[in-house]
Length: 234
Image 1 (tube, rainbow, N blue to C red):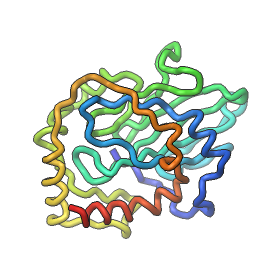
Image 2: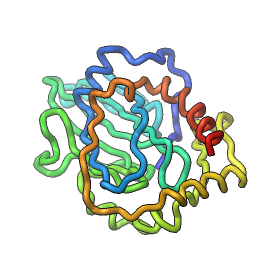
Image 3: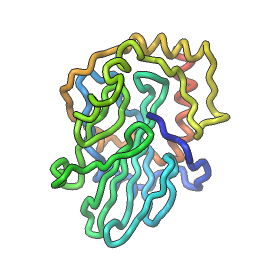
Image 4: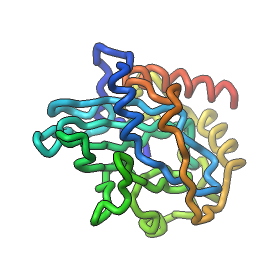
């Protein structure tokens, strides 16, 4: 689910520094997708906070509290589609300890967020946490069983595909707009993408694909352009 309330539009730097890019690649979570998933991320908007501050793309304040955490990496994960609407934005936050260890992980879940590490940190290997991605909807969890507890778990990938048309989050008010004709085009397309989740999850490797990692400001600028291009294609 897109959660762009409180998006920061006015940050000076648009480029992602080489240092932050290297850090983001090293701590990028392993994302496990249902093998029938039709949509994968196309960009990761990266923000590295080394002191307390507001998330630029999610309504929350991030705390960098030494010695427990020396920095927080925010991954704003962008998809061209959620199974129910045009464009989607999810989040992972990785807290880095003073000695470079993973101090904590959090992940977005339908507009809120969950802890991303299991008891005993059993889903952490080195600096990379493994997180499951809800089929079609892209909410994140360290355990896949939670997805089946969501109302409409299968309906959203079947008869409810495309139900929301084009969404226009707070972040893009004035930059994106929808109407019934636009929503109908999106619904018609997403109905052709209907699928049944298999319950079998596979690792999607992306950490070393440099073209996917951009600054949040760069992604913020790109999203409306991608949406308009996709609408033109439809």
